[in-house]
Structures are given as structure tokens and as C-alpha cells.
Image (cartoon, rainbow, N blue to C red; front, side, top):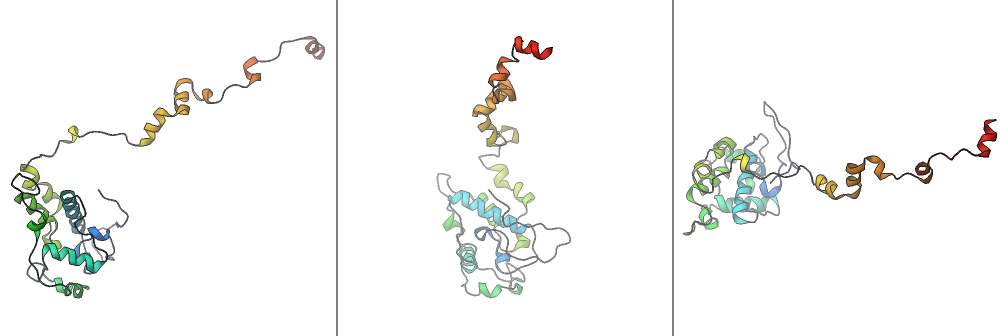
Length: 216
């Protein structure tokens, strides 16, 4: 569900970083708005995007550029302000947010709760919103999300690790199982790959008159 193509190493204490990390569709709003001192909260935003993508069966924000991406985000979450995101207007690129009008969140419009139990329950929506909180300080941590009632109480329950299917470590093993050369090695050793030549098969020539003359 992820790769490390636009990942970076970080340590303690935190120091300023460039904000051009994460694929655009999964990039946290604080990065889009120019924050250079950020934490693993940006990864939790990406987890929320993947959660939404699983529900929708398509990416939730398919932005074509950073400004477009911000518009898609705020179209769902509503435009943040100093009350919902303290000091957000201090971010370097906050002027980008001023391109958008204040709007109400559209969570239930995008993730309706159906009578047959489909889509997303109230608990599920609560968890999704906690992962996709615009303010990084208020965004859910991995530990909190793991203990969220949506995962603990609602069906389907998470499987125990021992119940999960297992797979071969590499498809190279599967290829080796049907490769003629590999089969030959298992059955007859390396020699089976290199047949003896005629001289090796027939052995040394028998002694004859010429051999006797040489011996004398």
C-alpha cells in the first residue's frame, strides 16, 4: 500500500526539511501549505487517504497540481481557520488557501451510511476524520488509530496474524520449481547440467602394440 519513493529519514531533535515529500495525492495539507517542521503526522494523513481509497475504490484526491490538491482537500474537510488549526495562517503558503471560499465539510456526502450497512458507519467515519484532520497536532497517531473502536468493535474483526495466509518470499522460488536446469541439479547434481564428452564416457584407450612400443 505504500512505497518509499518520496520518503525521507528524520531524527530527534526535529529540524527543518523541504516539504516536497509524499506523492501529491497523499500529501498532507501542512506540506502543501509550506510547513518545513513536520512529524510522522504527515504519514497518518496518507493512511487516511488510503483508507478512503479502499472505501471509494479510487483515490480520494486526484490533484493535478498543489493548488488543485488543496482545493480537493478543503472541498471535503472544509477550509480550516485559526480555531480548527491554530497558527495555520503563519504557514509560508497560506495565501494559497485564500483562493478558496469557506465551505462546510462534505464527509457524509462522499461516504454515506447506507441502511444495509454498506459504506461507512459513524464509528468508521469518526476514525477516517481523525486520520484526515487538517491540523497535524490534532491528527490521530498510529497507536490511537490501532485502538479505535471502529477496529475493535465493528465487524469484520481484524484477523490474528496466525490466521493470515502466507506466501513465498519471492517468485524466484516458483520459477525454480519448474525450471529444467534447476530440476536437473536437484536430481543429479551439477554434473547433470554438463554431460560427459565421448572421451570421458569411454575412458582411457586400451593398451595395444603402439602402447607397448612406447613403454619400451
